[in-house]
Image (cartoon, rainbow, N blue to C red; front, side):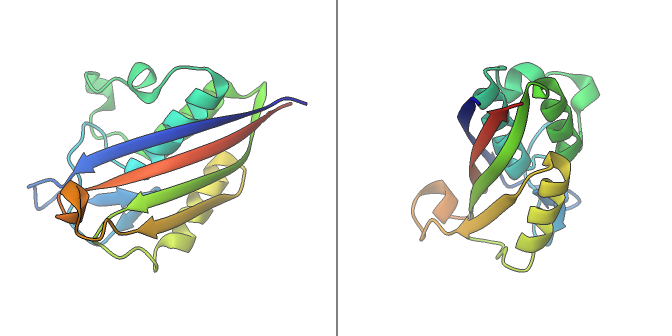
Length: 156
């Protein structure tokens, strides 16, 4: 049986729009929203890139271009499900590991819900960890949020 690993990364700056919702891992989180063409869910975006990369199926920008009017305000959890449909079969997700990098908001109270929603969408275990940038760089200055993701696929 063949296995493949993919890594993904995404980062978005905070939006100046007070009405913009913050969505991470398919979960509405208290705090300012992120700038982006879709809902700017950095967690889903990083997982999509890792998923597509592991399968050798391109990247999020090719599959879901930010120039597409049809994708404006799109729900990134739905985009994740569409990306999964593109690679399976022959691939099945074994597990996903994500690290969200943000000074704020604190994510501990959202983590289990994110893991459950993402796991349900992918049909596999997902772990979400939160780390701070310790006041270093743009993330440390609270200018945005980033996420790193790793996906393990196996051929079915």
